[in-house]
Length: 108
View 1 (tube, rainbow, N blue to C red):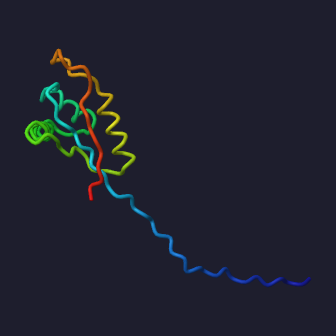
View 2: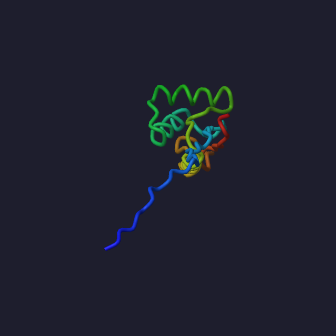
View 3: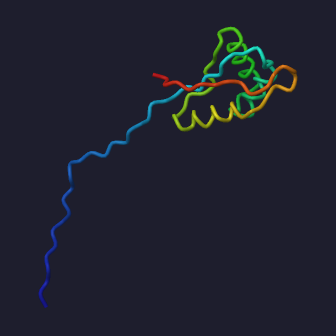
């Protein structure tokens, strides 16, 4: 019986780097059709923010017109933006016809 010699596999010098996606901000925008209570509840239910943090973010949205509510991957940011847009109107304000608005922006 003859034996066949096998050569050891050669390691290539190609690098396999994991490319990290740049983070994105989910930004909640101000309007006059949603109450602080609505914003605080939205942030608690969708982002698991405690009431105190929700209040601070609601205040920031009210006074500055916008607030970063989450920084995450682009895909997750898009999901959270969709959830905000689907959250529904504020039941305590009669003129309110829909959800709040959110945008996403690169954090860098």
